[in-house]
Image 1 (cartoon, helix red, strand yellow):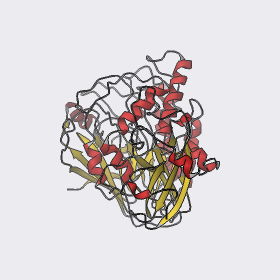
Image 2: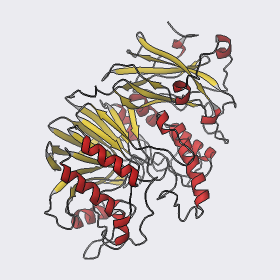
Image 3: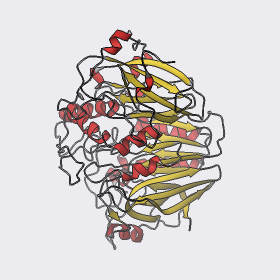
Image 4: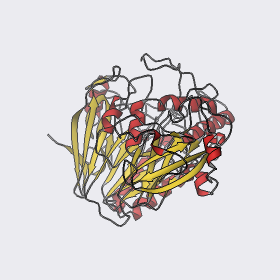
Length: 529
């Protein structure tokens, strides 16, 4: 049974095949404005080309549902940023099924894809069974999207035997192919966590044959829409979105390199111009990703920090360390304890209160911080001299001291920090006192490499040698591209560092370069040989 037309015009695609998508407005679902049109009106929806060229996606799984996403874009790179769609609303219908062939459809509905949101839609699906796989697809007029697969979270009070997920970050389109995503799609995962730098805002033509759109600086809403569309045209990225629900947060390049709140120095010396640019970037971010209505931006503001649980096994605190942070300290060569770094906040007061309150009340076995920049202290200079990255938590020592002090004092169960940003793999102990190597280990930090940023990379590097020599709490360094696969049980957390030897040519194989395990109740990771 179908709603107005043959849903099988395009056969359901395997999760390992190309996935096309378009978008759905969360407001239309929640406010009831997405009423189904007549068959005549639906049939009148005509496009110059296939409208689902940007794929489909799902995100933020809950025990009873997920948010779905697609965006109508028959010409994704159209110069006006509108994706080649007329300036009018379109009715987009969706189906959710218990089977990939849609023989057991459990939900149908319709929402409006409106020009104000670049014809994206974000229907929030509820009433599903927990811990269950589902398949979904969209239809506009007579055009049917390929099929996506998603999965709901376990019941809130359940004790799951295991959770398997991957985390990734930093996918510069012109720096390399998204080969890692192709391999990720073949994994058996419950969810994917993306830690930021989903797009890169800067200019640069790139050197890859696929970099068919010259990159110019993104400033306007149309610029950011086109940049997101360019990235979404990658079939490996589309396939990974269609294979699993994603949990996303951003870092700096979704807006501007190293920005801090409304400080864009030296790119935007005017706070008014900076906030207008941030509003455009945040709007495009929402339009192009599977985010719920709670994440809908209000001008230059978008609350992205949130909490998602997988039963009592693991609770993810998804942080935003860009929008609310103090400006970076002016001096990077001092020890991180200097006055400005002590006074600075990387999360802002409100988010910090939310984080500490949630950690203090958590009943989860594993408490996860999904965040952006390096948390452990990191001396960047060999020998007696010291220097630190003030864009990371070393520039916000007060925030780090309060967080790690709270975790230790309250005995928070198994804190694990997930980090992106630095384009290499690392494992670090988070210490009560980084100046005393023998001080207690409070938590564990797993740092994942980039998907493509930095090009092919190498197994190690001079920077890696310095990192290991000068920072005894950093246990592992590796400099190729890839992602981290994590398998979590009540007894242990296992992180497999999955890497490819090359991203400047497509088709590279993948291997597990190293595996580290954290045992329940014993912070600090140990290598598995």
